[in-house]
Length: 266
Image (cartoon, rainbow, N blue to C red):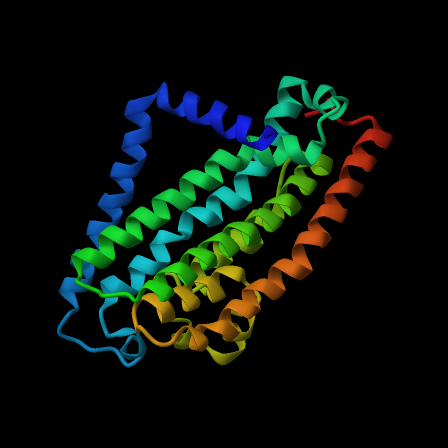
């Protein structure tokens, strides 16, 4: 119930700034149209790297763009809550409340994740309808599950980012490791197969690589769901390994900040 209260609060705040709220969605679809015309520009040249996904660059990049918001939200939302609380001097008060710090942290960021999830679903729906892509019902349902797993995986990464900010305040390397690398190595704008083999090994360590590959398999090829299962399992393994680790590291970071008396420093 507490998490729902956080979502309701943030929803009401965002709706009080309706122009900015709808402007965000406007920019999202403008970027989508830009890639549509890029795809039209090269529509006559069939790339061997895109043939497995139907050969349409716009359809390919649609999947990547639809989940890029998880990257920025996952990396920044949790750490932003910590940083703002440090600057405002409210972090110590938050930690002393009967509500768990995890509830406060996740609840304060949950609206950003939910709005990203909704925008991803909306973008995929509009884009796939526009290009006339037929998707089986079971593939659509499993795709929603993949989006939720993507949500969870970047929540785990965000917890690591928040832990670093809790202790070191500035200079967060998690953003660089998982942010820039996700855009470059995650197969968002171009297939991972074009990269050198040793670089492809690094891309397999990123959750977004498996998320985009699973969604493309489910939505662009209409292959049986079974074909996407091994990819989805890789994404689940990432969550199973990183989420508990992130929770432990964050707990250690809170204890260290309390012990050093740096909770109210910024």
